[in-house]
Length: 113
Image (tube, rainbow, N blue to C red; front, side, top):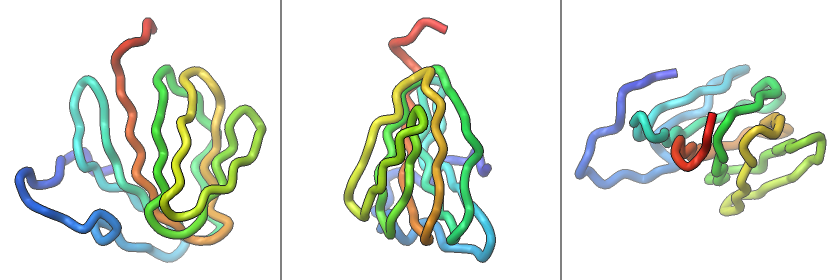
């Protein structure tokens, strides 16, 4: 994952920040601070992030395509423009039944670790 932030004070078309790559999940950091991160990811069909549990809420917004977000073993199918919050301390999986792009925002404050 690239930890360098995007250029500030420059307009961008969010969905064009990252491209799809065959058989891959691609990630680019938009903002990276000690208090949180904003990343944009693209998933090729059949790709997934392994099940993880993190100590912070995560906001997922689908900006292209359709995604499957599994939270505590419950599947949620999201389309372009839809979003969901993955609660802190709950296992989740992000899956691409077809290719999609998403913005992932994690705020690392307000929780005791």
